[in-house]
Image 1: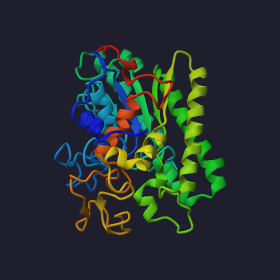
Image 2: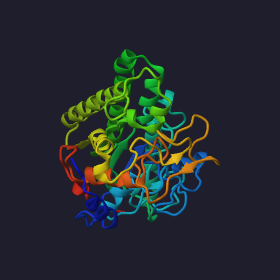
Image 3: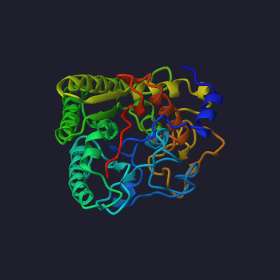
Image 4: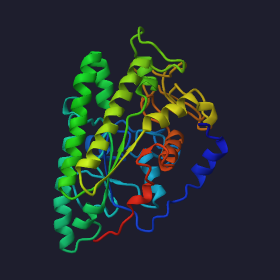
Length: 359
């Protein structure tokens, strides 16, 4: 679907908050695509300018020149950006917590030291402590009703699938990695549900075969589609997303009084890449921040956040920020399309989960 440039400009400059006078508490689990600073705080990191140049004017621990999809979703509800969890409870968590950490994945073998199950354990630890302190009158924390009525967002899988594509056979990927990853997501949702959570928002994985990093380092025998993306890799990602969608359908039936929304992020991102000119983007398969120039601006040794990096001018609109992550401009359009409900199953608006805090 074409996305006129003037619509993008309107969205970026006047994102209107959804009709949500009492935004939901949000708990997010994910990787660097939704990490708002947790990884940098806990593990350190290579964050230097130009990270953050577009919106924050300085690095914030986000692998982006500005805002992430989760930031735009929070803006749509007129709520604060999510505070990353770093182990302490002395910050303002009144609107939720971000447990996402860069490098994380669904499976521990590919995501040391913060895979999904560890993020869930951190959530449980935070939940217990927050409820206890909230009952004593502490401010900026959350009570049991807040956890029960919260929205739990999951945006994870890119690291697992990238690693698996490079180190597994096709059959092992399909018959081993995908079922295992799906089972881990099922367990995470069940763990939250058994603690009283009932609202879930699950993102599929984007077209990893279109990432400049993957294209620049691919095996030369891998076939490219007509848009220049790695066909086999994207087919495997679509298979994972199909099974993730099926999981969400199954769990809606199994989990009484639950709401589980699956979002087809793959279709959104692939459309932006394959119709890039309609969105006003240049060089859809070339990183803005990297080294080496065309076609991908990716070098196996020198990358973004290195002294020799080359960075596109801010006036140039790119999809890829550093070869792995998207620019703020691309994230804004992804968020806009997510909010449209056209890619959601069931097609519920994000503000469907508005509720009343209790502490």
